[in-house]
Image 1 (cartoon, rainbow, N blue to C red):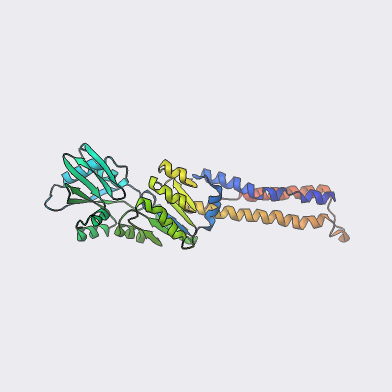
Image 2 (cartoon, rainbow, N blue to C red; image 1 turned 180 degrees about the vertical axis):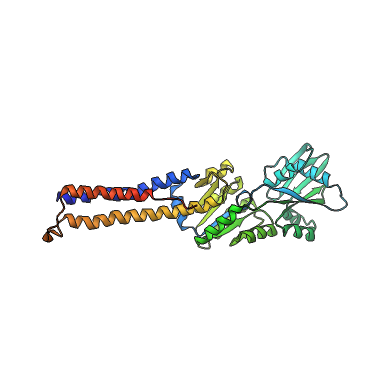
Length: 357
């Protein structure tokens, strides 16, 4: 009776899950994954799709000016760039930083205004200047220089248009290189059976180019900031559990809508506060490593529970004397050793948890 009571003490069963939780949380922190929502982290093992924000996540987010075009009799490319760069100095967008970086001699801007999801406008050197997306031209029935635009877009470049005093005067093309880590991350996620989808405000051609280069399963292009959460919901309606990875202020609603919100630590405070998990490095491979850790954590929990339950199922009948007729009986001291041994094995098994990178 004493031996049965000693062996039945559920030390191993009570420690099976908490030990794995402690080890996985510590391991995640050591590798730059800060888990703010434990439930969401454990849900990551069931993900069917991951949606990536393009700029700064799948790409370096460092745009550089590659082409300057002029239209309608405006021929001074340097002046066009100077006007656009002066206006863009008031914006924090990666495209804006790329234009400003290429501009010499910035001028003061008056009456600056942001055109939500479409561009910016203001008065520079006495001229009313707008730097806008192709979508703005379409909405305002401004003829788009289709041939030149499609040629640049087909090269994976982002094109913005410069309107001076209500007349289209030029275009600036910028390139954003794809991270090498992105290719490895997408391949790892595909190996896990997870769909990879891209979300971007860029045009269809640029988005298609990046998606093709990375082998993505799907993409959403020309998405306005307020539409991102709706796109997450659209993928969820396909019956998939969805994770969202982003770093900008306008990514916050999408991070909240997703089943698992993964915020890039180098991004905005709003995104970080909204995310369930924070990645301290802007490396897309960490997303794959994070999901691999979530899967491994669950497997360790199951292993420990099976061990603790299996031990009791075997040892309690033995302690109760089921083999007494064969001369086998456990003393209370031996029962205590077996009970302690099971706890030690559960602890050691938890320590074998590791991250696959």
